[in-house]
Length: 87
Image (cartoon, rainbow, N blue to C red; front, side, top):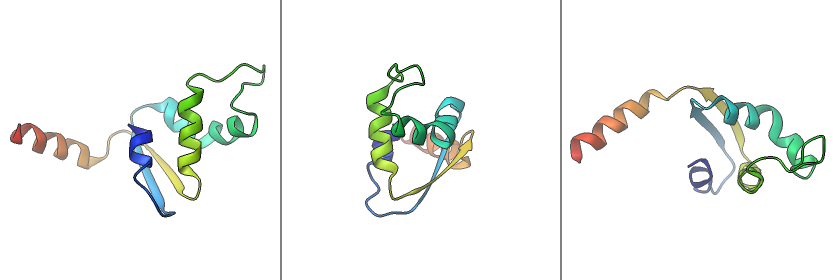
């Protein structure tokens, strides 16, 4: 889902990512740049898990400012409710 969403941005901008997945937030904020610099390998030389996806994400976020937020965005519940009402 993250790759699909990031693929929609064509011009550099500030992108807010809201997710309950702490691993994704931490990886975006603290690990991704280091993984890219090391060829998406761990300090021991092993490939990181989900390497292909992280490489794609790395390519998609270049030129953007990424800000991560833990938890759902308030809009998420509203959107879910709207979709359920129309279904």
